[in-house]
Image (cartoon, rainbow over all chains, first blue to last red; front, side, top):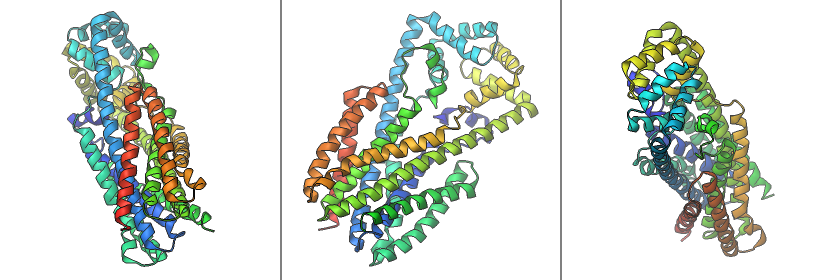
Length: 236
Length: 236
């Protein structure tokens, strides 16, 4: 939501990741974690890699669709919500200009500006109804105009990176025969990938990189360990 | 992010769900969908309900931890990000007041206010440094002050509703012996739950309820069907 805020125009070093990168991060962090944990859980419970691979692919399909399609529909909903609120503000500016002027004054009263300044702003704002509506959308309601292509792109980016992420922990089960061997390699590979991914994620977000890497590793390991012990409970 | 915006104080009928409800929605929509799809996928590939139940519980454990802990750490990161930007703005207001005044003017220039009004606002804002910093945080950077308890509450709400959601599609496999029977009941129960959940979710968000219900049903069904056919591919 903060993409369109003004710091991009000023060149101040406030970091905030672009939408594309955020989608990749969302998809990949769940893609690395959940299929890994599922495979780890099943490794303690079944005797054949085939079941783990089947379950893993079913999970990757389910997860990528749930996240990708979910992201798409969330994006569509955001656009519809914006359009509905826009119509409402356009109507209110025409039908109840005094109420809307008061709302402009209230925004600036909240910032501690004097009643005179509030009045100047509200009157000047009222001269250009398009800008007035823009102001109400952004500063009264906190809504930025959503990009109509975002929903579709976001779906592909999130779903695709979930698939890529999910194939990482699953791949060792192709090249081993026993679930215990698959699990060993899967843990090694996934923990390394979680670390590297967490490192670059944190850097892209402008946060401490080592801390970010350890956090992501912690989530993945906790999920894997929990799934492993819970699956064991059901087989003993 | 938009919770603290001003429309709550005015009583205008702009709808936006509270944080608690949003957490429940996030956890439950994935909880209903992904374990359902995984169980559906395995139903086409294995001969015993036990494996489906084991995999289902492993997935619920993994998914709820990944989402809950992920939400917790995202909340912590948001707080740290806010604090870091706050320190930076506090420093800049002291060290480069003219640059910051120009940024205030730029915000209002973007709203089409005259240079005189921009000047009045910037000078008045500079009288109270605390309010000035608040303004820069909210309107230049688009950051609202995060609630420190949100991260922990959010983790429990998301993780808990993922577990509740996930138990719904899994439950029929307890009471049936063949995966095909479990799948039939799981589809019926889950589709009904997705519809009811989607209906109330849409209403809580102020969107058309029937459309919302159908959307959620579509995501769940697509994920289930994809997982089913992909799992079949690996067993034939």
